[in-house]
Every structure is written in C-alpha cells, then in structure tokens.
Image (tube, rainbow, N blue to C red; front, side, top):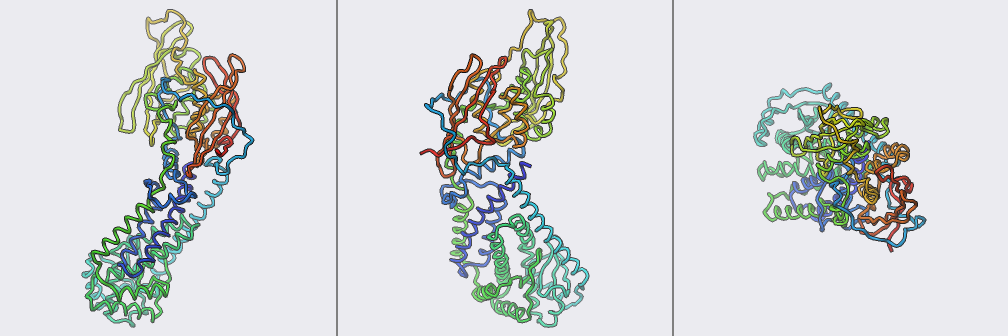
Length: 628
C-alpha cells in the first residue's frame, strides 16, 4: 500500500509542477506566435513529458518553483527518498554502534507547553485514511479513463476492419510510391479505403495503416492526393502516433487536471503545424501554395475528423482559429534560420533551468546536520553487529528494525508471535564475531557471524549464520538471512569449557546506556522510522504498540514541517531505575519557517537495558508550535 500512496503523492506533485511549466511554455508560444518554425511549437512540449514522467529533477536557485511556497521546495527530495525507501526499506539512518558518536548536549530551561496552538501544516502522516480514499478514487478514475479509451479504440478498429478495401488503384499506388520516395519511407504501410473516416489519417502505432475516405477519392486531384499522403507519412516519420498514445496515458493519470488536458490539446494542434513544416521541407517552393489549397479544399468538403486516440490526420485540427493559423504558417513558411535555431535553443535552455528544476532545498544543511552524530546503525558492519547483538540480547525487535521492506512484510507475524524474542535461554550467546564473507556486487555483501554459546554446565558451543545486506538509496539493510526459530544450529566444542558460568559479554546494544536510548527515541522521530522505536519499548508497550505502528506503515514524524535536530534533557529522577526525560525538537519547512515541539518519555532499567516505559501518546508528531 505504501508504494501506491507514494506514487499518488508524486502524481499530485508532478501535476502541480507540470501546470506551472505549461504556463511558462504557453507564455513563450504566445510571444513567438508565427515568428518561429512549427517544429519548435511542437517539440517544446517534450519538456512537459519529462516533467510528468521523471520522478526526480535537480534543484536550482533560479527555478521558478522558488517563487511558490505552495510547492514545497524540499518535497521533491523527500518524495524521492520515500519512494525509494518504500520500494526497498523504511527510512532508517545508520551509525556505528561503538558509542563514539554522540549528540552535543544542550540544556533547555523549560518544556514547551503542549496546550499551545498547533500548526495546521503538520502532516499527520503520509498514510492517513483521507489520502488512502483519495488514492483509491484517483486510481478508479484513471483506470476508467484508460478502459474507456481502449474500448473506444477497439470499436474503431472493429468498424474499420468490417468496412475497408485495400487499395488496388494503380494511379494511387504510383502517387503513393512517389511520396514514400520523397519521405524516404521504406516500410510497406498499406492504404485502407473506408467509409469510417471523413478525413485522411494514419492509424496504428505498431502496424500503421493509411486511411482514405471512400467518398473523397473522386473529389480530389492526384496533386492533392500527393500532399495528403505526404502529410500522413510525415506523421509516421515523426512517430506522432506513439506520442499520441503517451499523451493519452498521461491524460488518464492526470484526469483531474484540466491544465494538462488543455496543454495536450494545444500539443495536438502543434503536431499538425509541425507536420506541415515537415512536408514544406520536402516539396518544391512553388508547391507550398498547392499544399495550403489542399487543406482548404478538404475543409470545403467538410472533412473534419473527430479526434480518436492513436489516429493522426491532416485535419485532426478541429479549431477554426488553428486552421487559420496553419494556413498563415504555410503561406509564410521559410526554412529555419540560424537565428531561429539559436533563439529556440536559448528558450529551451531557459525553460529547462527554470521549469524543469525543483526549488532550492532551503534546509538541506539542517536536514543533514546530525549525519555525523546520529546514533543509528550507519555502515554495513554496524548493521551486521546489531543483527548479532540482537540475538545475544534476545531482542528481536532490533533485527526487525534493520530488515528491508519485503522481509518486514513477510516476517512481521513471525516476530509478533514470538513476542519479539529470539535466542535461547539455554544455551545462550556469550560472544560473537562478524566478518565480511563475500562481495556479491557493489550493492550487496554477504556476512558471516560466528557465535560462542554456553549453558549452566559451562560447556562451550559454536554456531554460525549468514546474512546478506543490500544498499538501498543511502542505507544498508538485511535483505536475506538464515531461517531458524530461536537459535541457529549449534554444535559442541569438544574438550572446551568455561572456568565458570559465563553470562553474555557482548552487551553493546544502544539500550545499555539510558542517554543513548532517549536519543535513539528522538532520532527515530527525526528519521520518521517507527520500527526503530519498537526495540526501545518495554515488554508491555511493545505488545500494545506494534499493531499501531504496523498500521501506520512503521512511519512516524511529518513530511512538513520536519525535524532538523533535537536535544534531550533529564527532567527528574523518579527512583534509581526510573528517569523522566524531556526531548525538545527543532523543525522547519520549505518556507524556512522555524517550529518547536516537545515530548516527555519515562525510561526504566530492565535487566541491563534501559527501555521506554511511558511516553506521550500521538500518532505521528507531538504538537508543533511556530517560533516567535
């Protein structure tokens, strides 16, 4: 579900940004009007295809989107990160677990009052029910549009195949062969004579066919037939049918945006002027007037054709204004000059750097501010050690937190049914070693983990397991591991015993330090990773909240405003094993506004680990307040 929601969010964002680009393109087209070649007016729309089909574009300080606060400047990067992570993994930052990295301690004198007015722009999570309903409605409408178009095209195809005659007229064949030679078309594209079209057209993206109205053949001269066939072959040469189908799909996806529909209406008109220009390049100058008169003659014969997906014809232009514009451009046609080429290139470059780039990410430094002081697993060695340590400490939730998305979805029930416990009460792990076994490819490595175990008889055992780690975006996660219930298979080490009963020596989990537990709790909110909070909860809270976190897609935190940094402060000592902390968060958004937020957590020692026993109750983000 997560990936579909992220796709829906991308469609909405690209639709909004595409609309701005359309306005920019129409502005230049309006300014230039008939002063520049028809090919420019047509191919400039390729920029819109790029904007609507490519999910990521670079940021720029000169982007037009820097002017719009309604389009978040950092959201394109956020989307790219979320899209990649939901294909592969949740948003988890990694750090070495040796405890050397730490966040600078800062004190704040007071806790932010939670009763203050909250910010309306805080997103209560990417996966709210409202977004899901909108996504489902959008999907249904998009599918309905595509189904309608496909059915309409199948019906058109059925009508054509029931009512057509292959051309047997030698005169038409001679004219056609001459046109193919002029256009340098080697493919044998059949001519179908039919009563199902009113205007000559080319139909079919894979197996194209030229459609000629039966009623038209007796009303046009050989010269006019030549110009008609040249025009249709121009559509074939320029791959207009393929582009037309692409626009049909995009219009179905963006069915809710009339601006995009209007743009593609203009593009279809420009397609005809571009074909006119293409034909003009392949005929003698004294034939250009005859070509224009042919179009006027077809209009007099009332040969305007209803627009159909996958069909392009000489009179696909339905507007009288556009027909008049075509005639004007034909009569004024000149080969494109070097000045026009330079002007076209400059305009396209300008539109690319202003309309095809995202707004500059105002908080890029803030977002990565704690990259070197994060306390989450950072490199693949650290992830492998955490995997082994989770077995030694019997805390399976830490393993769940470093699984990729596929494994999380597959193994969640198994983890839940074992109450997030792994490892044996006897024998138990006393130590382990982690080493890189092999490099599968640049993004995948295999690790070997060797365990030493013992029991109350001081007997030594050995065990081994293998895991594979894969690089997702900018994070390493476990993509494959050995399957076993509680412990991997172990064997007796002959004639080897400990001198005394030995307890686990590893004890390197973050939760053995109460400060680190609190910071990891805060870091999980900053990184929007609910799964990393799960191993920090005590047994009772873990059972209560795992279902809630699963329903939320293991996501916490907001996409806007987002947490840039935080500080933790000891508020009070309840007893020698229980402490209460305050966490203060600093946030920002795409407008560079500053916000603050705060929450309280109670941490209690359970065995050797400090775990969260109580925390503020919220779905995604504690209340957020603007800074004055």
